[in-house]
Picture 1 (cartoon, rainbow, N blue to C red):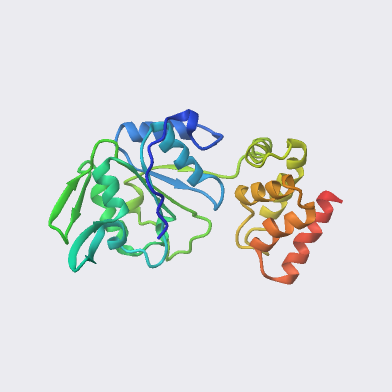
Picture 2: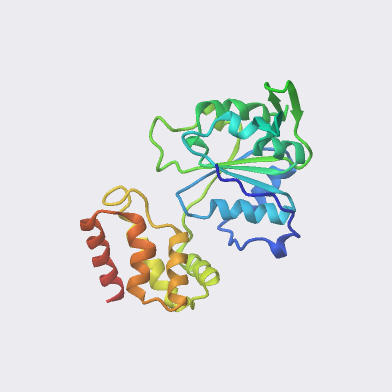
Length: 270
């Protein structure tokens, strides 16, 4: 389980860089102020996690981030008894700590978790805002400031890995996508330090790769990978080597697919 340690930020000035695409920042703030959970939908690497980090910093709230996976259980989120120095002690999980502290808990790719996880979330996503802990007999009321945020990639999940309507309808929801080209160029330049003119063709190349999603590749290239590529170039790595390491290799292991992607690189860059 990947968990980000909570830290209090000083506000928007120290928030991780994020460029809004619409009114998502206002929606997040409204959800926070009214104690409503929020669900973020969109492709891998389009900025959902960065957005949550940015908003947690703007609001000055601690943030627990949990990367959900097939083996993640409700106990991983709530906590369990552990042996410590010959004694059995209770250790809170990240969700429980967030509830106690009034922190933001972000469940990344929530549909990847085991089925018992969504059952645990239900009492926290309505007006009760409680977390029953069966193992200790506690029923925790969420402290002021607690917010539950979850995300998933609808285009990647199959029919066996979707949120039930009974769960989806407990959340406000926002759809994310890759930014428009001009905006993505500005983001890549800001994050990598590479001049905008050189970022433009990288973003154009990413768009062509994304058009192949569902055909030769399962997922389109993320903004994150474009930033990695630009960062390598800014550090002096040759263009083709940077593209191969940060965009082509992560997309596919198939040599024929990689050759096809290299052909697109040649068409874009000459």
